[in-house]
Length: 313
Ligand code: CP
Ligand code: NVA
Image 1 (tube, rainbow, N blue to C red):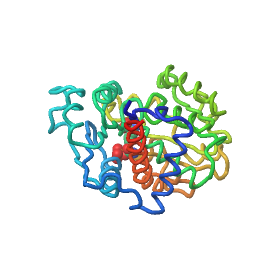
Image 2: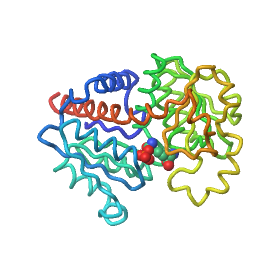
Image 3: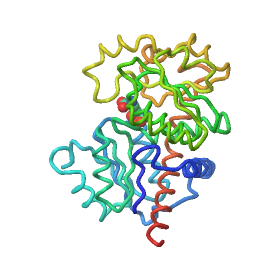
């Protein structure tokens, strides 16, 4: 069975740690792993806009000895004209992996079910697991161990970032708190999956509606846009509802004095985060953005290793 990376709990706690260890190594020695030498090609498909994901996958695939083929859905047959599974059947005969940023998680599942090459979720409406690998690499660099840390996500609890924090944080043995207005709470299924994972790792999962309680004593504060891609028509209503969830200096003061601030970017200063927080001394956003490169390279190397071992097993 081909291993894919469609959501954060597609890897076990030990595997997540292995990928992060490898990312640390690749950050120290950027051209150490060359699994794509040939060069082999990786398809990187975008149904939605991107800066960081596009650049970090393109650069990372080149670092690994391969060639990135960046495909915009608008100029391809995918997206209404051809199914994900037919696309997968075509691509797998020519590329080493498929990386896809899309809307519905079900599209990724269909793509993965139809192909022998690894499929990587480069953001869906439900999850952003590559971002979480970068975030965790960043937190490890600044704090050492992930296990036992309290990480609080404030804002849109139903967003890809919040839901990935639940799954990835529980996998890492962290205490994950997600605070959002009640109508933007995370999916009950994702919360249940995260709780199950947390039972294995000694972590915990708490869903709240009070931002101050969520921030209290936290080691890491995280937020993201209140208006994710695809939700633009709801902007006015969302800004009104999320008003009390802005991460500002007062909220940061409720966390530990040395708490880190993370944001996957792009950011709307003055909305989900105050400028003095995101541009202040506790913010590690530039390390976080750089770490997309190292974390995704490690993920690809790891997936190729897993699938090579699976093929010979
Ligand atoms: N954080 C992130 O995924 O950024 P992009 O949308 O620019 O890829
Ligand atoms: N939640 C955001 C993340 C952007 C990287 C979105 O989906 O637009």
